[in-house]
Each structure stands twice: as structure tokens, then as C-alpha cells.
Image (cartoon, rainbow, N blue to C red; front, side, top):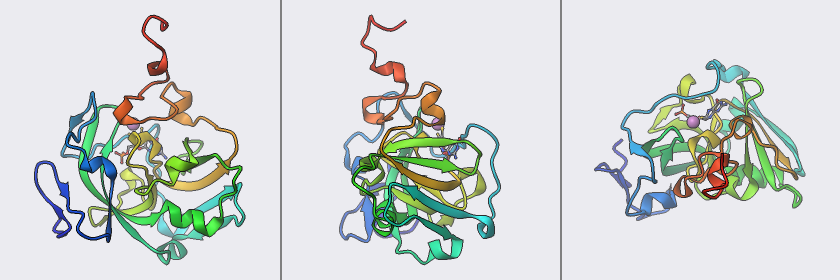
Length: 224
Ligand SMILES: Nc1nc2c(c(=O)[nH]1)N[C@H]1C(S)=C(S)[C@@H](COP(=O)(O)O)O[C@H]1N2
Ligand SMILES: [Mo]
């Protein structure tokens, strides 16, 4: 953590003096911790099932659905894509927030340019190597400035428990939208709620609006 482009402090702060690092907009807020969250300096590990051990040599990413040019990248091909660095906070719906992460990898915008997302595509379904696990995102959330397919965190390769070889990072949404062990991205016209979304989590998951559970949208007095 000795990158001159941000300060280590309490909390770590971005210095937006050049554009080599993408500064996630939420890190410019005066209050960095969303409502109902607490800061952790550790990085907890959370997933629905067990942790798949995906070797780099066995990993590939398939991008399919409503795209002009479906693609499959293996590890070596993925490493040759243009790279970005993002400075962001990371908020889990179980109420911890990890501030000031540096993520490195390939911008979702780069992936979008290479495959050509068709205008009918409104959602993307991200699938993990933990079989059957998916999460859904609107295409515009997927294409956020600070969203990326990540393989390095704070300068170190991602570990298996945090989603190696490659995971999605979508800093502006709760962490369950940041699919670990990324296996495929499918662009679709109709939304397809994923694992946690079908399990009662909110479909959108904006931490600043406390969109934790689907029931959070029900006005007081109308819930059970
Ligand atoms: N493939 C996959 N990705 C996943 C999950 C999962 O079960 N499978 N869990 C999500 C949840 S609920 C959270 S909070 C974050 C946690 O990321 P971390 O373990 O790196 O903190 O991963 C998300 N990505
Ligand atoms: Mo989570």
C-alpha cells in the first residue's frame, strides 16, 4: 500500500491528481460508511457454498448472449487485455464495509467494447464457478466507471477465498453483486434474479439506499 496516488489514513483517501487510477465516486463522499454498516479493517470471506479451487490453467471466461461477438478468454488471453486500477470501498449486506481497496484488472467497458453489447441487452447475468450461483445486474450498473473484472487486490493476486483467478467488482452496489470465481457473463433482455436475489435479497442492492432485502421496498404498514 505505498502507491503515491492515495493516502493511507483514516479512512484511506483518494488523491485524484492524475487519471491513472479510477477513483470510485463513493470514496469522495464526506461520510464513507453507508447507513447500517460498520467499518472492518479485515476482509471477511462470504459465499453461498464451498470455495471452488479454480486453477489459472483451467480458468476461462465466456461472454455470451446478446452480443455481436461472443468470446471466450483463457487466463493468458485475459492477461493481455488493457488493464485498469480502481480505488473503491466495498460494502457487504451483512453490515461490514472495507474502505480504500485497490482493485486491478480489466474494465467492464473494455469487455463491452470487445464483444459489442446489443441494444436489446438490458441485464447481465454473472455466473461463478461455484455451480449454479449467479447474480444479475442492469447493463448500466455493469458498465459503471469503477466496475472491473479483477485479479489483483491491494497489489496481490486474489486468493481462492476472495474469488481467484478473476472476480467481478461492482463498487457502487452491495458486495453480493461482485461475483467471485467468474465463469461467464451473459447479456439478456429480461432480468433473471440470481442466487441471493431469489433468496430474498434486493434486486438492485444500492448500499446508500439500504436496498438489502426485497422487503425493504414495501412501505411501512404493508409488510408482514
Ligand atoms: N461466485 C460467487 N460469488 C459471490 C458469492 C457467492 O456465493 N458465489 N457471494 C457474494 C457475497 S454474498 C459477498 S458478501 C461477496 C463477498 O466477497 P468476499 O468473500 O471477497 O468478501 O462475494 C459475493 N460473490
Ligand atoms: Mo454477502
